[in-house]
Image (cartoon, rainbow, N blue to C red; front, side, top):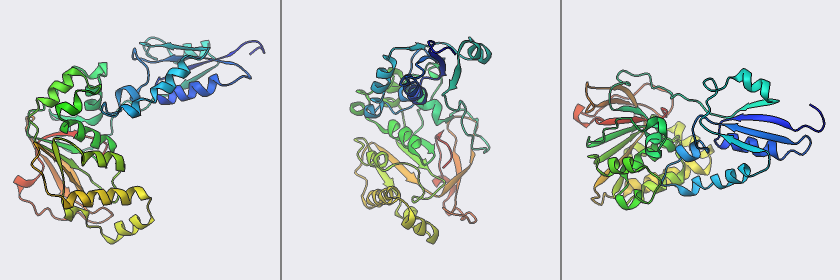
Length: 321
């Protein structure tokens, strides 16, 4: 590269990683850098636009920083360009001094249990993309007519999905949720949202602000069984060594367990130390069979519940937690 020529870099992916990488490159003075950003979608910002819950506008506001990066001299954005379809890696390598790939995994982690592919069982990524308006997911046939929805996972994505299903018209209509998803959620027959976590409350991956929001829903009571919050010795020891996050989560959960349901239209129920072993049935109104298990290593505990008390309903699965 001659001293007078700028370094030309192709950045593939227009989410946070792509924009932060572009910002660092454009800040270089020696040598000066020009960035061309490519994305297979027509719009930028990746998961900030299509993955963050639409009722969390403050998180989405990070896009303002991306807008400033896009306005810098030497930056260009090319949407509707897919590497491997419209342009090859070899072509990019010939045209640019460097190629930066800044996009995430395109597939979901599977649970590996019988019935996972039955109708009505969906990965959370598909449901999130649907209500956020991702063009690849707008034709998916989400049937929300069942009275119970089962969300499998113990992280923030699972909490986002559960909360979105519980929102009232006053809560969801001002958000960026698509009109079709708003109509489907408000017209749903769902009365109970059951969130199943394989790990215990001390190991749950959701953050305290996300959990706090579940206690403030206008149209849903948060229900937690106090028995699920009893810690074994290993979990109690881990909690003592853990950050304030886990202790705050447990505090919020215990407060929820101590409250009585107020009779709201929906119930959002959190359960812990249960592992899904099968999704049952030949139609969308099937059940999700689970088994209790320890938060730490050890054999699963026998399930004392009669069959009619086990999880049944449509399932939306986050990464197993």
